[in-house]
Every structure is written in structure tokens, then in C-alpha cells.
Image (cartoon, rainbow, N blue to C red; front, side, top):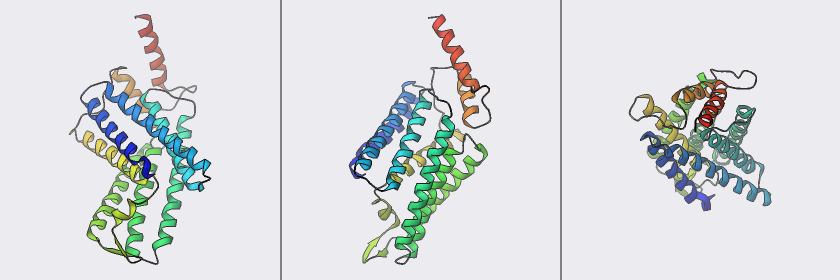
Length: 261
């Protein structure tokens, strides 16, 4: 994964730039976010193919395959694309990613619990934070009332991990001094990238909720369209005859625009 780190962090910077541009009411900001999400998906599928050719372990394939599906669907949402049963595919990809990180948590715990209980506890906090963040993300369409408290718990676990890592600076592991932070930074999976993205999203949600920063902006469709999309994404609206209200609204709006060009 180290070879891809510069690209990952470049895309994270692009997401931040796109977010600020969108909040400043520049419509291209949302497009930058969509391109960054698409690029994440491309990186994940390239690595998936590389690991497949190398016959890597199943966990690496599950992680990369799940991340590819999640990032691709998120990019599609930015560009208003949707396919039937997209929520189910999104949920299944999320469950596979959760399963992957539960296995990683158990393997990490078993590998070091006999050497240092402190570091083992820190790893439980670290991986549990990722697991709960993914749970929060994939439950939005199905159980929206669970998403926010689960995300808040994930953030609290992450803060506990960071605080304890700083507090317990020197942990002896096989004759070397490590910290919780230095140990997880050496991981070859995508856990650090995921947590970085989740923290950015948490910060955005929290700051918009208290009106410190404005929400994302797009003038491609009327504000009513985005309100309908929000109703569908949070699970408060169920499709009728396989269609959500925002899809019908989009079709009628596109027809109106085409007639009046």
C-alpha cells in the first residue's frame, strides 16, 4: 500500500479543496469531490487486480473489493446516477468491509496480547473505531436512527485511541519501543486512509450542524431535488413502483430543461 500513499493523500487534499469550493457556492466543487471518489475507486480496483494476480490472502481482496464498490457508489451519488438495488449492494459491500476489519482486529489481538496488553487494547480501539464508522455509513439507508450515535461512538473510540497512544508513549514490543500511533502507521491495509476520510466527514457533519460552516452547494438542480434525495438516502422515503420521488423529479426537470433550451 505504501506505493499508493502519495496518491491517497493527494485525493484527500482534492476532497478538502472540493468541499471548500462547494461551500463557497462554486458548483465545480461537487464535481471535484465526484472525481476524487471515482479516482479512489480506480486505485482500489487496480490494487484488487494486483493482489488477485499475486494470489494474496482473501482479506486483502475483500477489503479492496468492498472499498471499490463503496467509493464507486458514492461517486455515482455525486453525479446523480443510480441503479436498481444500489442500497442493497452498498450495504453488502459495507458488511464485507466490516467482516474484514473484525478479522483484522482478532488477528492483531491474538498476535500481540501475550507481548503487551496495552498495545492490544489500543488496537481494539483503533479497529473498533473503523468498524463502527463503516456501520454508521451503511446503516443510513436502512436504519438512519442508528447512523449518528454509531458514528459518534466511533469518533469517541478514535479519540480514546489517540489520547492513550500519546499517554503511553513507550511500549515495549519484542525489544523495540513503539507507540500505538507508530504501530498502526506501519499497517499495509487501508485503515489509516479510511480513518482520515471518516474524521473529515465527522468534522464536516459536526461543523455544519452547529452552523460554523455552510453545507455543500450545487446549482445543477433546484434545492427541492436535494431535499428529496436526502429523504431517500436517510431511509425516510420508500420507493413506489421501484422509483424514488427524487428520480421522478429529476426526469421531469430534465424534460423541462430540454424543452426550454
